[in-house]
Image 1 (cartoon, rainbow, N blue to C red):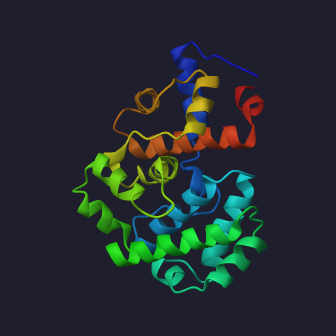
Image 2: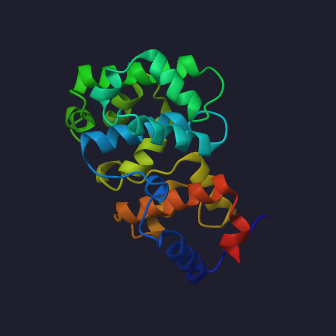
Length: 220
């Protein structure tokens, strides 16, 4: 099903509907988006899990299971045992090579601790708040490629305003199908340009529409 919204007022009305909840993708699913070490690291783990193939709900369950087992920070996850991570991930519904995923998450946690004392705000400071450098430092971390970086920055652009505009692949698929544009810049224009928080809400809502296949509901 494809819908093209051509009139400017209709597009703005749709943007208000999508972003009107005042929460981004992660917040809609129960994750806090705050600029503190624990929250930022949990968002990064969520991004790693969402980037894997498979049902996104299993990724959400696994991302919740990590802090649910006491691993709510890089330091705590770094101290966890590989076997325990494997067990928790499997119990949360992860499929495929779960042992490799457990390795990646452990390596990621240890690297964040070793390089940034467990605080991704130090990564941002090391990059001098330069978006390209921030992305480069993120993708240098274990398990973080450009797709993972997009998912992480999609959420944190509400906090790290210099990285905006960011829209991940799924959000852009939804934006095109709903006639809202073809790029992150197009979406930023609809949300007021510098309004990175509102942009994060819109982009997150679009990603959710595509993941949950809610197009018919949105366009009615």
